[in-house]
Image 1 (tube, rainbow, N blue to C red):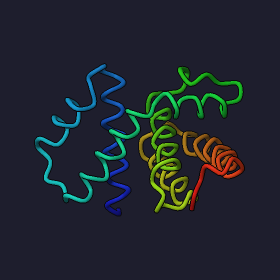
Image 2: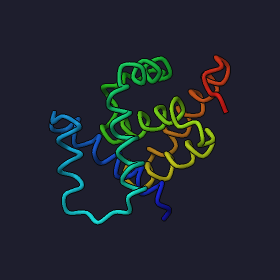
Image 3: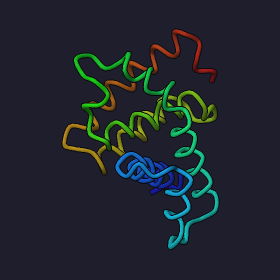
Image 4: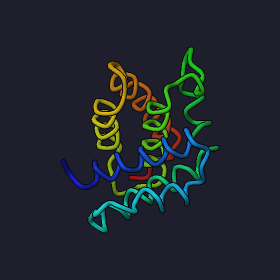
Length: 141
């Protein structure tokens, strides 16, 4: 598994801990890395994703809420919600990563950490968001 996918998985785990425990991201991040021997670039990418996503939640959640048909964001499983949040953060802020790669990575993370159909759900929602953002000129790649 590549370092960037591993970083996405670490970021997901940190976001999950923040949401499940109510602990601030800075505390979760500090504790998360305590006993892990991780390549510096993997850790840096994971931290950037987790902290960036956490600090951008109002914008990200608005985008997600507008794209969920017949679902409320709060009703999604914490894992699924945070997989989507990470991908939307990447769409908006990680300009070197092509949108299709972001979707593919989210699908693979959902296969590993989500429920049985999580990957299909993530694929459909993220592709719709990608199209909306492209049409609005928000994906500058």
